[in-house]
Image 1 (tube, one colour):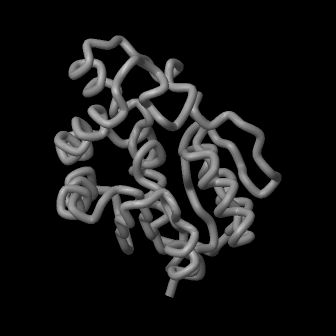
Image 2 (tube, helix red, strand yellow; image 1 turned 30 degrees about the vertical axis):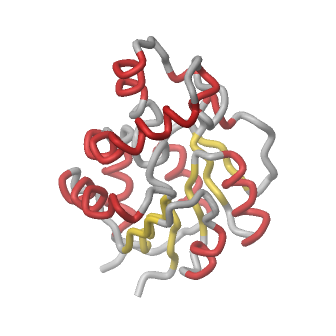
Length: 193
């Protein structure tokens, strides 16, 4: 049995935070780059009717998830972690895209112990239910709430939309290599023989 279990967000954490932008740019004739996204709500970055945007997103989300590239080094590090830790992906994606999500993990050769799509950004109860020892996130308020409610370390993947202040128990990283450095400090384990 592995001694530690990690809760891991998918979009903007395992996948590149820029994954949605090519789709938005094409659909809405925009030229957005990641630095234009200053808030988690993408609709604040350009002039669009929010209701219409969310209808569009629902119509293409499965394709977007299927085409999302993983962040650099995510696969390599998650494969290494899989030897020592349980990897529980907890995402706000709706359960209707479970097959697409699982197929993406298999196709990208990214290991998982469990995938749970909860259809909500409120991840505290799911993280508590699964007894995770740390969480990996890109949404600022989720990271802070998970740390404060569960008293666990949270690794926050830095993006322009999450640069508000964070408490000591939330560690901001710019890539998966930095995340790995924090995990080596916080959760040292002996290699499995």
